[in-house]
Length: 108
Image (cartoon, rainbow, N blue to C red; front, side, top):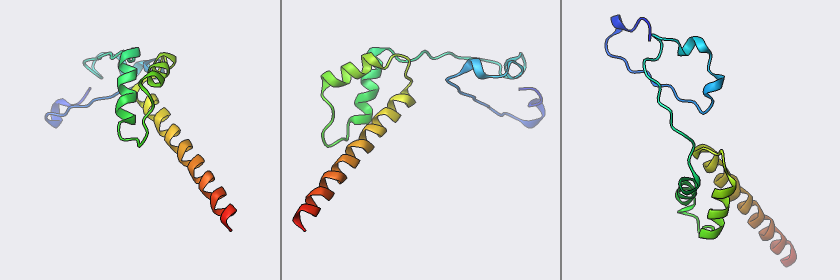
């Protein structure tokens, strides 16, 4: 970036999933010297990401379900898939709490 010569060795890394939303002035020569593009994960990679984020679940989804999810999540990045898994876990927990509450009420 401009003006770093007098400050020693500084490395600045920026990352975004929305390169179209970055102001052109930030991308002009002299700002960031290099740009690397990492494409969104394909179906197989999405399935592997789902494996990673469901690995420690007490009852992980079946390989078939993860395959279906991976196929239907075109355009999702790794963070999107992590959020999907987190939301699924939260919803499952809420259902469990609701069932537990119903059982406790029936015992009263």
